[in-house]
Length: 205
Image (tube, rainbow, N blue to C red; front, top):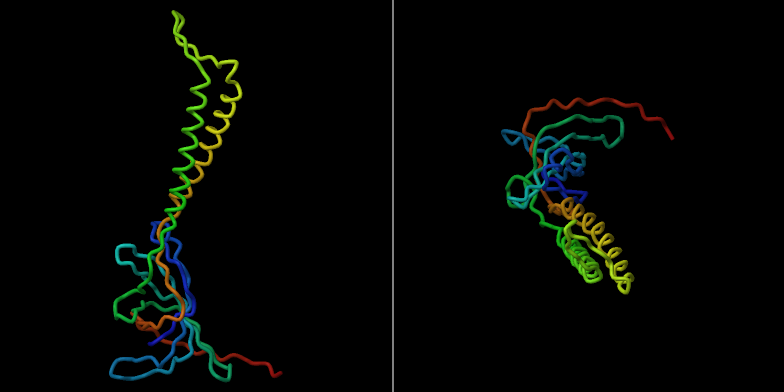
């Protein structure tokens, strides 16, 4: 069935994306082509699907979830789970997309935070003196450098907190496969399905 992608999505390429796929909505554009050139009029039906990103192929693997149809008079409905997949305009399985990575900004902020942390440690070291005796090594703060030591300590601790935060953010910012809406695709049902048409009562206006 020829279809149109109505919703764009960003499919995660991480391992967590497999357990949390992106939902998407498709609209059937033409009658379904069955074996022996038999056609079934499913034009206008909606298909709910789920997508998971594949970084190695730079594509999103899509699996069908359900098919929903409504008659023109609104008196009959089809709503059933289906199994299948989609192909892009190049006839390859899955939808081609653009690889988008947001790790760069978080990584750059992590480096900057580490730089300021090093500056803070340097200020603290410059404001202290070490002396060695029989009792061991002791570190004392020069009375004339108390302000420098305080600034260095605050800068070091604040930068360490920011470094940990941005490092955690960089680990979470895995690449995604970005696919825009209005893409022309083909829906393929991989398992035979008997469509049950249910009559519904429509109240007059």
